[in-house]
Length: 436
Image (cartoon, rainbow, N blue to C red; front, side, top):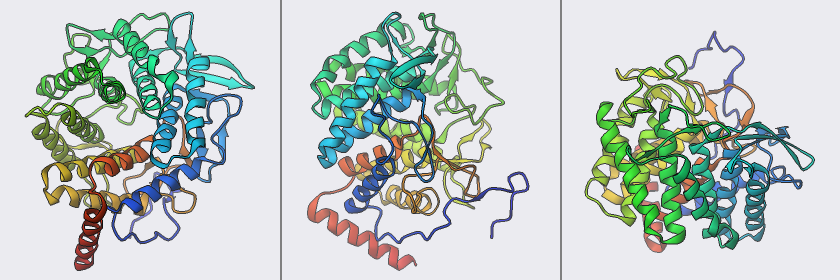
């Protein structure tokens, strides 16, 4: 039995309701139902008719901040509803995606400085810019939003793919390093900080841009960035992906050393970023089957599971240091989601059941502790022993893009179809029965 934590006496177990049984986490029906359930959590209150969407939700779905708008959430909602339309065909989801695109162009876009504002105050259809810092991370999600909107059939999104890529090229591309810079002032003075996170999500967006357009320039750039981060830069940091670098792309081992839980720039190796990169390498391999991609994906995945899986309470920790010790014991929703998606892709790609075993194990843990079976969607952060810090389920940046995106990835690229899926589900169910 878990003992009370004297440092956090008010914390409660994340799930105080019964956890419904699941026959197989490898079932298409299960994954589709879970995505629909997550969409239902947001549906009653997410749309702001005056522009965009609300970004802050408590556990029960009530909005607790109606005015703050974050660029990352604004983009991720477009992804969510574009993907939902492609999967389920509900025309309301398509209209929501268009609604989100309008907000990107009419509210976040700063025409004077030709950049997207990071954070806004939005009240009665009028904006006040709270933070106009230019982030490559933010532009990556702008590119992702336009790419997925285009794949959903929204014609006005298509020219914005090229325009956004050119903006990133002009403002952030470091040709000598073959990587993107990270941050600039509102008038585009680039800072000396360099980070892998912006490059990782830019790779994700470039792959989507290639899928949406067929243009090789995006695929070529995705390959170059992926290689430079996961091979060249990783050689400087024990073969794993480190987060922070100096302007010359030498490793900065001390950046945010006292802030291992920073939302965008945490110190330490991020298990979730090792597995997220592994996922991106496997996606890249679909378009360009280079021999190094699969072995590198396996190495990154295995390193994350070796260093970060909690044998006592389940789930993956948030971070570990260069000496291999855990530096942040909390459990984050997105780490679990990205890792189960990668496990499934590796299982499908290699035929090795050990990856599927990890997929099932991560889902069992997440289903028991992260998924809210009363109101829907996932809790954001849990303690090491799986208790909630607050009832703020979905603040800015979350939107459950990671969880639904992981489900879509498994559905599209890891599960067999038709009779094969039925047989695989039955086999997994029988295997589970034998281990009870």
